[in-house]
Image (cartoon, rainbow, N blue to C red; front, side, top):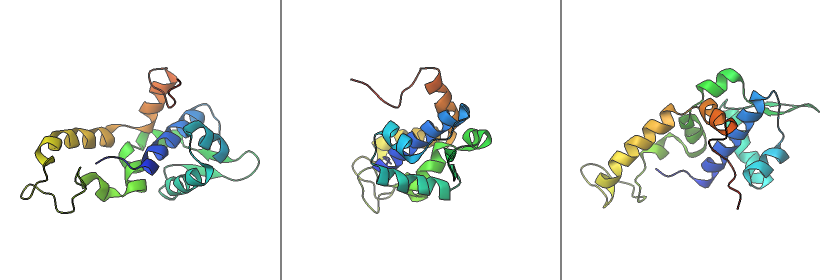
Length: 147
């Protein structure tokens, strides 16, 4: 399982929204799009999926924007975003993209990737938006790598 481009950007957006929400701020589409370096139309579609799946909230009006409740940021794990954007079945996909890869009929990378895949699934099931946001706030991780 490798994340789709939409999933990667959705994770970035959710982390950015979480950080802003921790500071009591809502952010608009333009701010999110700029921060995650994604076209606005593409970002809007991703945010719509995140909202539909109750990962983020949207508030209308002049003081509106996107936010995540503190309860949600602690309960939302990466698996929720991956499932919302790429679908639950994406977790089980063959690393080489084969449709019928299995223990009985493995692709050339199946057994090599098996341990990595297990660790990756464990990571996305146990990593919360809150924990990622707190690492960013502490300066331990970054959403943008400046040259």
